[in-house]
Image 1 (tube, rainbow, N blue to C red):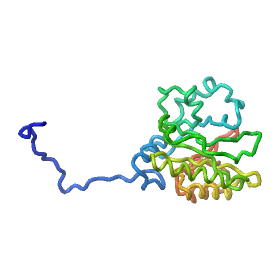
Image 2: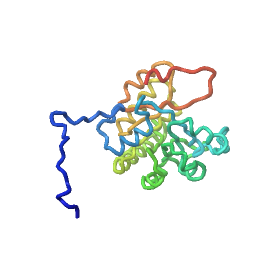
Image 3: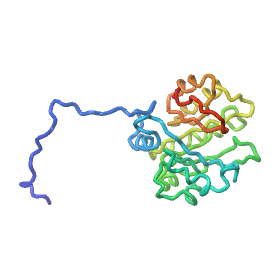
Image 4: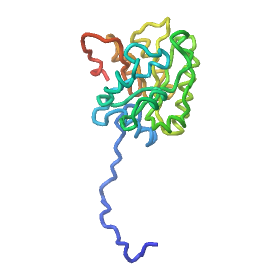
Length: 240
């Protein structure tokens, strides 16, 4: 037990100086618990509020598609250039070196393939396994306007509920229904529904016309999904 005679009274209490409590910098995230904010702060740069997400989870429904035949050869060299990695637990355990030291958004939905209805997904990872893998977030598709829309919405709800219990954010990735146009109206609808369900951030596609409305109407941060390779660079970052 410490000798009370050796304990000196404190003197510097900052009397008259209010304790500073800085607001969290991400849109719509101020009321989240400390652990969830901490994980989001690893995903989004605290200085800019932005992120570069390297997603290579496509194999969960596409298999060894072009460019992803060998993750260790084609994708691993890009790890240092990204802010965050997005992948499945199988690839994370088998290919991504733990010393990479990049935050991970873990693909947590599956059960479909390019040979079947893509929207028919289930939650494919437990939150306990996400914790074992030190994931900073879990991700699932939300297919608004698709045949199994209701099931994909339930997947998001389940992940949000379990993630809130453990302090792990949920990323909702907007999938496009077969009968839906890939336009600002659709992505505004899908992104807003995802946020209303409790997703802490949303991944959606950039569209040339009206994306400002997509970003403005979504009350949580948006990550722009990649697309086909083009010859020019766009101005997507200017509207976020």
